[in-house]
Image (cartoon, rainbow, N blue to C red; front, side, top):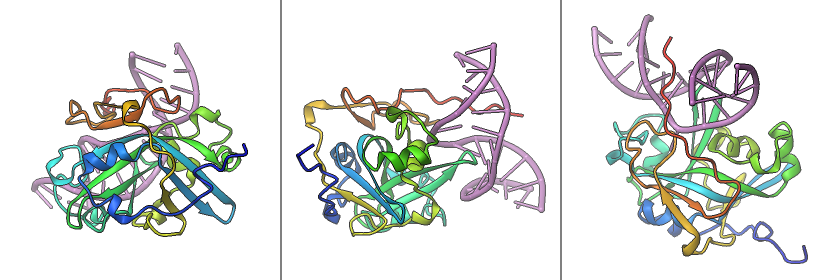
Length: 211
DNA sequence: GAGAAGATTATCT
DNA sequence: GATAATCTTCTCC
């Protein structure tokens, strides 16, 4: 490739980008680049699938029942990462948006590795390229995102940074029901880029087996 | 302090 | 398609 990819220019996006309603920010995030820098190197992913969570008025959001120690980051300044641990083994990452005091955020569900695929492959234990970041927990694993990055500022140079990349044309953005959410599953707040192989397959929420 | 549910994934049938 | 693995967080009492 002679052309410099979006990951090459790692200029963080403006915080104003996130200081908008979550339903505006979410589709606009498709095609953007999330870069994770560690001593081992940099892994960058081009986002192909996201989900919007509208805070206290959203039954599926962690903020539905108000502010707690866990979701505090979501109530804060936009442009920060909200990382949470779930199912005893997985991390998922959100980007906080909306004005300070609004608890909305965008869950990063899937993406395509465009830099540092070798490092991502090591973290993902030799998974196929398509599956490296196909799913929210896989994306975090490929990028090495963990609890320590909760609250990280993605609008400033650092371990985790969002850059402009190449936005997906509006005509290629699709929306539909959210995946894996036990409530409000009929709300079309999931956005993905048409034709991207890295988009995760839709699955209805399956209740956990009770013992 | 105890109990239940969870924004998932890998693996087996 | 169904299920196990695994542990944090929240909600009551």
